[in-house]
Image (tube, rainbow, N blue to C red; front, side):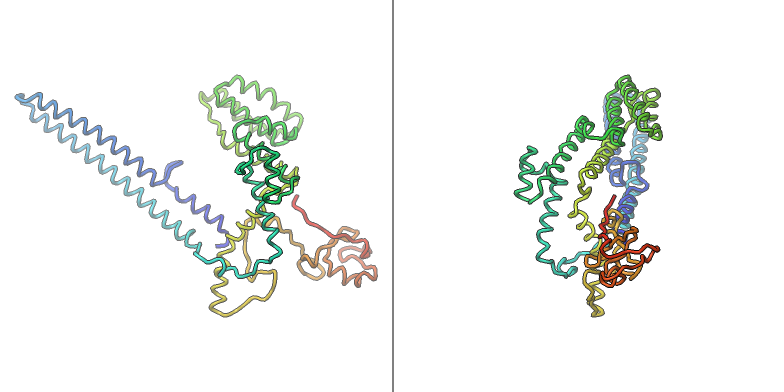
Length: 403
């Protein structure tokens, strides 16, 4: 299983197949049992009433009528019990089958292992400082409000003294966390003040504000707010394709007696959009390096386990440094941070020791190719791609970035 995350997500969704929306089969068992208990209590009250009437009617010849009522009660009880029993058995059977499939298709792919036995590469002593730095940045990114300090200034000082985080970085993370906290508590003013005019974030915030007004039941205020901000925004930005986002809100003002807006979904959309724009504007990582490395490691463990098993059985080893003996397929969000350039001259991947260089014509080759073509910088040479002549002194080292 090369796509562990995708498989886990798919199999998890299958746990609710065949059940009502927002339910599981086990929850349906609970609800059916609760309904059965209520019906039994009603039937018990009905029988108690019949017994009381029978005692009051002693001496009257109503035995046939009472027998008929008892028979009706017994038949109703049997019907209720059979319906409940069949429903519960069916739900339990479906739940058992789905959990068995989940166990087979997902959980059995995860093995118990000892980390030191699976991954035997030694941790470089000089890498400790990078791990500490990654931990500090992770806490700054996700756990600012779990710190013992709550004031912005003292938070920055705490992160610097305890985790060694650069104040220039932690200050941005603290500001982002404060705006996110206000946004999650439905205070839109700080986020609205921060966002760029005409941005997608501004539009989504306007929609969220309109949804708040619609949820409160004030349809007139909702209409006035949309009329005040949305036409001007669409005219200024020429983003006319966003009109379809406003139409459902306007339809609810006219056609629906109660609001059907999904505030949680829209709020989360604003949170994600703000986080992305804030990190991009301040050159901050959207995901912490610690999260990315740990997630990559978790996905890769299954391949390490298989490799160690084969290695022990066949007595083979891998001698190449800085390269795994197997391919690990990771999700796109874990691989987009590692640009790869293959030099077309030597057909080799660029590395730290063999970085890419740009020629004056902007074509790129590796340093080893540059040394070979220029004879270690002693002569000019023709670009392998075009007729332009280049020299070693006019080349520049290339650094790939994620845009």
